[in-house]
Length: 165
Image: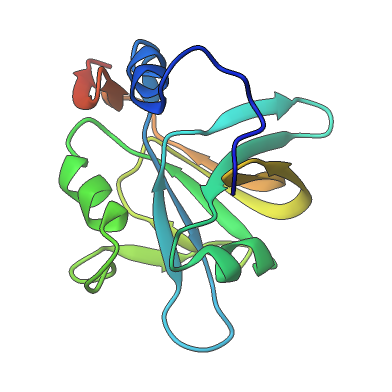
C-alpha cells in the first residue's frame, strides 16, 4: 500500500513522535468457528460514545489473524494490569501458542475473557473503517467487567511502563 501523504518526516520519526503519547495495553480476543479463539495485543483502544456505548481499536492488515478478527461476530477488549506484561508479549507474538497457560473463561456474550484484567468490554461489531495500513473496528459494548483496584500496564516511548492504581 503506497502512502498518499506528502509528509515531511519518516515513518521512524512519526513512530517516535507517537511514542510520546502514553497508551494503555489491551488484548482483544474473539471466538472462531473452528479452532482456538484469536487474541492480539492492542494499544489503539479508545472510547467513542456513551450512548450508545461504543469503543474502537485498530487492527494491522499484516496480522495473521486479520481476516478472522475483522470477520468476528463478537470480540472482547481486555484492559491489562501492570503485572500482565508477559501476557501482552504473548499475544503480541506472531507465532506460537498465544493461549498456552492463559487463564480465561467464556464471557456473557460468548467471547474469551481473560482473567485478572482491570476491565473487559464484550462487544458486538458496530462499524469498520479504512485506516490506511490498519482497519478501525468500532464495537457496541454489550457486557462489562471492572476490577476495583490495581495498576495499569501502559506503553510510553517504545517501552512498557507501570502505572500505580
